[in-house]
Amino acid sequence: MKTGKITAKLRDAVPVCLMVEGKEVKRYKNIDLPDMLKEVEMLDFHFNVPEDGKITFEISYAQGVLPEVFPEPRAKMTRAEKAAAKAAAKAAAEQEATAEENAPEAPQEVTTLVEVKPFDIAALIAPPTTEDTAPETEPEAEEITEQAAEESGDKDEEAGSMEIHYNVTGPRRKELATAVGNFIGMAPVYMKAPTYGFAVSNYIIDKNGTLTGESNKALVEALAKQGFTAA
Image (cartoon, rainbow, N blue to C red; front, top):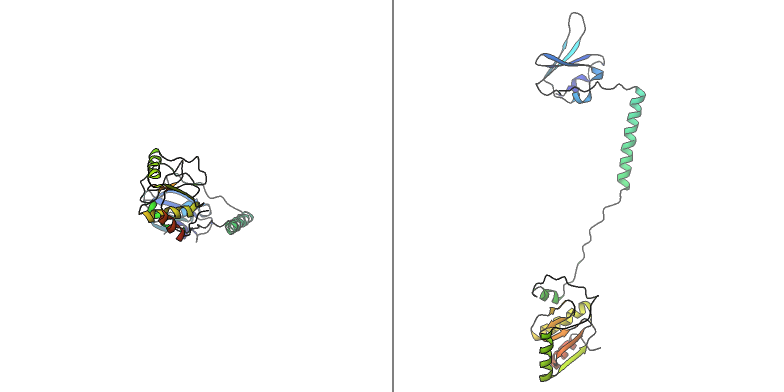
């Protein structure tokens, strides 16, 4: 049992003796007993009534449970001070409750559903790169590699070349690259900076949606069936 459970029933002026192994180690008036000591578990208690009539209330504790340095007696408060302290505690509780009610709500997480285009799957099997992909909205001067230029030149001499301006950008340009890849059986590869184009075998779709490469009437007709027409 905690000390405060029994001392709460005593008269204010009764001396409370704290005993360890039968020896008194500290004495307070009941009204002065610090709140800290009221939480300490006790072993036993009894009234001591000597012949001189000076009654004391002795509480026994186990060795080591009492503090080595005892706290000062509890400060006495007048009724007015008690009332003021109670009012202050009530006002603080009301202010805290009001602050919680007026606190802004935490922002809710918004999940955006992204439509996955066919090209997105093909792009996953493209060779990995450590370079960051530059946004298509800020392209620089367009160039092609020497190897692509040589291969394109050889094809131009043998079978002629074509340049068709589809004028498509963004997701629609990716769809165009995917359509060309599906027709010739090869996955498009995004070339990143500085061209920002798609390479599909010997065909190039530049940043403005212009298709260049070997002339292929069947390819042009297939693209037209999918809604891609020259501007």
